[in-house]
Image 1 (cartoon, rainbow, N blue to C red):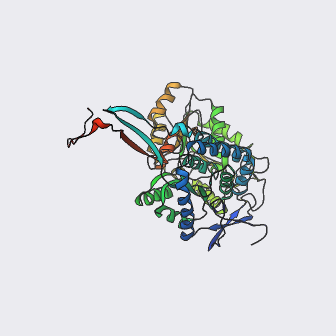
Image 2: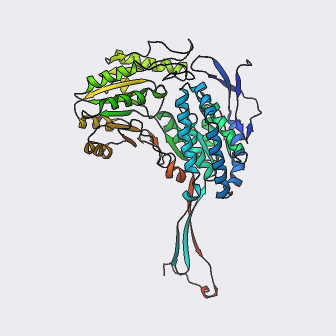
Image 3: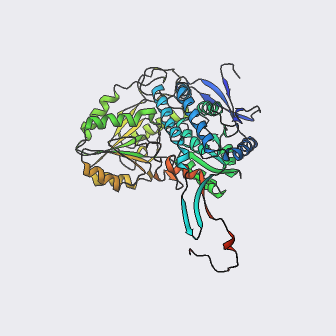
Length: 500
């Protein structure tokens, strides 16, 4: 291995793994195409080794007081805040998104840590005194044990933070399985848990591919699985995890629509479409990829969007630019293939991101912002989740037609409507069959004290991420009925107990 290529390995029990990997994979700098890391991929035996460490640590951590857990969370929050620039730099180096976007990702993850710092209040149970004669009933929430978190490449810091702080706050240990494409941010953030005072083994990082995932899904000591990724894999994780008796929340793909009504502020809508369509090179599960223009505004709106796109600069995320490269060469080629397919299927290619100048290495994984007009629902650029900087404009005649389009889509992750009509907005939020709705907000990602998740094929399982849903997911409820006897309670009574 070249001295310029770093070894990236598992973090187990608070320390780097010392074994020898049977298989490895390459990690790239997307802005140059250079190999920067060699990643150890876990075998099933390595998974068992890591899970055992997490399982052993979970026993003591689950009995640790809420006061101590909260102290660790506050310390962790401080450390992440202090090191957020370094974590953002790792994200940019391996994912490619611009530094400001990477820093925003870490900041949004910090919100979940801050939410988890309130765990003593969130875990309060209920109490009813005297439900029967001198009988009290109360409820408590207890940790599950070992939780697995399988996170995607597009948010290597934020998505783990959706789950890990809450799982830890609730008394669980965690095994994080990051994406193989950009693994270093997960290691860096896990190392900060040790510095914050978390006992070794409570948070571990396991790198791997399908072999590692499959073993996590079947391992008897894994009690819950949190997953974010494409819909086919989310469905696979959900079906196999639940088949093996695990609690699973699997967030899948999306095809997010932004409806623009004729009364909308078109300058605001054009800004939003560009921001939400091309931020992070469109590699967001909440990206707007389908812009629905309710006529007669399409021509004017497209003109405004095109003007804004002409000013965008695509390049190395460490430099002054608006959009970075795609995460890998094969992914760039896949997205480019969708652009070619859109042209073949008859859509009007207004801006071709395959052309243009890019401020980065000649071998970087480049594709600039791309705009299609006159897209129809049967075209692949509409039906498929492209996960790249491709914005498709569909022209429809009415609000009802636009609503029907959104509701007939198999995905239901996020959507937005742009309008100055309060009645139309209120009607839309009630009628649209989507889990997260924005009104003049293009990317309606909720704050940490609400929960994140979609409907239909965008979510498998009945629990969303973070917020109260997250607390409930990482704990199980127990109800205790208590009577403290005194001498007057003696005697035999075989009758069914009642509330007398």
